[in-house]
Image: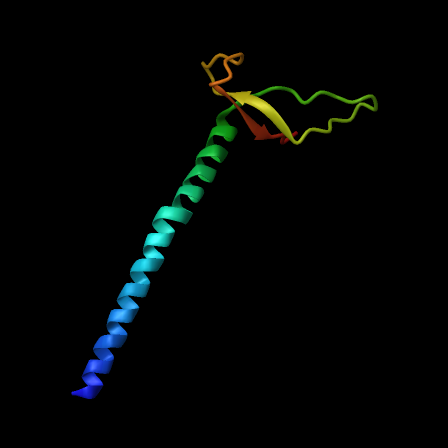
Length: 86
């Protein structure tokens, strides 16, 4: 009887630990993953400004302003920044 009680306690601990890890993933990690995917998808479909050239004729940009097709490029609510891909 003592052995089965010990196994039951171990099972309860494992079930609670799995529940905590699932809650952590669902409420903390999943929104970050989803937001990153959404930003990458938007940037791949976006129309971006040209990166200006410096005095030497080189382009040295990290981020550029972009907008989606059909959106006003001058509206700050519709523009976002993407990584310059050259």
